[in-house]
Length: 134
Image (cartoon, rainbow, N blue to C red; front, side, top):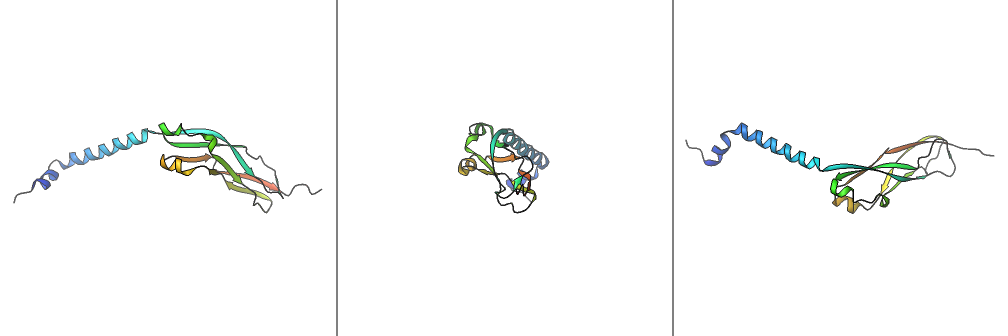
């Protein structure tokens, strides 16, 4: 029984071919990962507070913005075009409230460049009380 060239090609030295394929995939992954970097910048945080409650704990004024993506693109991003907001205006009782930091930016620019944005911390906790009623 004769084997055709296709099956003969894959059946001979198949272990070496599989190892070579795995190594090439690893090298390609390393090259792609090596081009990714992380940039950290501090940007102002807009905190919206409730009108009927007083914040007893520290209200943050800045947040660290992490910009993750290709090195040749992340340094072209102007952090002043990104706004961070944490909205506590809907707080309706005393105690500790937790709200996430929401980023507002033009998503088209970041989606095309495969840029990932996140903040540190991602959420804030503030303690609220009724305040003085005098």
